[in-house]
Length: 227
Length: 208
Image (cartoon, rainbow over all chains, first blue to last red; front, side):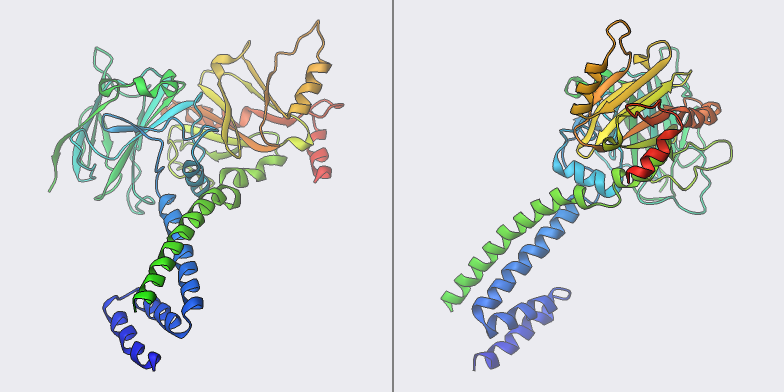
């Protein structure tokens, strides 16, 4: 009797939710058939699916915690330390990453400009100013995912040795899709989001990231967009 | 009806608590179970007496070879790894400093536990010895007071791990030299009786 009533209800619920419909109907059928066992399966399934999915989501991309915001840049001082948080260690393990240790250097990344807008490959940016004290640094740009196949690899970044500087020792790198005078960093792909990475090698800043301020890192200014 | 819906609420709450437990367990288990992490991948370099290049910088028209497995490597830094297993004996990493900046970092399961750059080199040589606590005590006891060792001795938290060698090529013309500098570092297992020469690799093979 109960089953006869519940079946159409389950079907109605299944029809409105497209991907979860099967799961909901399955859970409902189980629940009607035997309340306690069905609920136990439901609870276990919910726990397993939600737990694994959230763990996967939290460790899929970049580091979820541990970043220190400095202007548009995020510094990751503890990414390679033995005291790194479990999420950072899980992300490193999944990506096969070997992060820079504190005594080795400091990684800083930026995916937005100084105004807070996401960095886009079709736009032109000026990345200029000074860097925190370091023996050497590199500034590199990367798109999301793997490299586009047909695109020639012109230049992925500048090092502190090769970058052209003004008389006062500061520098300005122009990230643009088209050729620019000076330090031109070609956009890594035709469109889509890009990320900048500033790696400081042998720097005292790694131990005192909190003391860095906006003026110590290169400013990222948007100059214009193609479309 | 009310009883049933209450039960569903309880089951959902239980499921959410379970989800939290599963989430935490999964996060903690990923570094242990991962087969793609740096320690597992570096393991193949254990039988070598020089670092295994995991990222050689592109030189001229040659792009970086496909052995690169670092997700977003620095295109100007050549990287090599030496895996160690301290149950075979202490690991000695010797680097000769050149014109390029070089850094060594020792990693274990939990992350980097020591890093040193070539600025710490004594007379152009950087000798790093990674050992367990017991091996460290032994080395201290064996020290000759008249001829103190210049090795930098580091006690490792685990028996397994790897040492990362990074050499920065500031200019494109320095890139071949940076790749060569990574290969020029030697990683040998110190055996207590023998000199760390050709016997290492055979000793390692027998230890397996």
